[in-house]
Image (cartoon, rainbow, N blue to C red):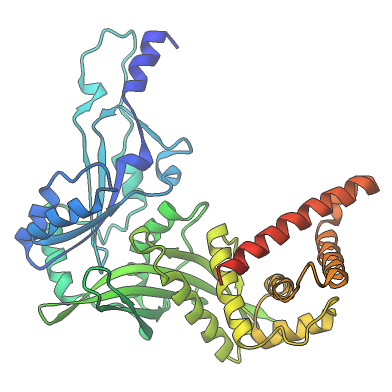
Length: 416
């Protein structure tokens, strides 16, 4: 590419993740919502306090944040060509997820006269996004969306069966904010539509995520909502959700598997994921039909959250009392069945529980036995990878893996 052409092209390229703004909008009046939407919100979402003050004065609340991923929509490089000052607003009514999508920009390359030898064309940013949005949720105009927001702020109620609630103290008021968990399935056509609205968020925040088949009645969906009382009326904001699939477990039971698990960015780091996971796990424990709880391709963040919660529960239940290395496979199976934790996860928890009770300086022999116990498990899980190595290299690789596992266990235990 010609140097001048390349330089010109680079000026018109934007990072898709930075250009897209996801917004949760609530407001009691149409006018207030319109004022908030018409306000040119700062491109820097870190200036949250300033934005919130402007939004409150405008009569509506707009929580905005960027996506983690846009490659399912705008391609693997997550770049958009052809615009200057590009801003893509994906606005949702905070509870109902009624949607308004708009694209704003200062200049567009194919509207500019140029002396370049080729005609530059701007990428289509509208069509790819609309393909992943629910048509039934889309509002054609900003005014229509504002009307939906104002109505839904007063009238929307979460779908499904309320199964749990908890509180978190507000930093601003010091009072407890109530959060509610609902369980739903796809038997309800109304919930199928609501789930289609949520699915776009899955693409934006879960790497490698795909839409799930909402015609399969073995899915269960858990949603978390913040409940605020405005003018004596409850108003709801979506906080997060989890999809869980019920597999068959021979001979006559089910094996539930967590598939998608998402807490929206404004609510992360506040314990909502732990609350949702603990509820689901306890529901599995109570249900005699369920064999154990598994997870599909968990992220590192989810693994950490699950490890902390499983360990706290097992310690509370005195599950590690009397355990010593080597732990027999029959003992692990009994613990897996009793606590309904998958084989891999109960093994990790037992290894952490044993390490937690060890004093490496005073119990050197026990620590050596522990090291051998964990290393044997590492070897058994990696026999194919280790098969082509000589004995010295095998020992080195296993020792390196053990050191990494032990460090990670200590990190998790320090968070309990």
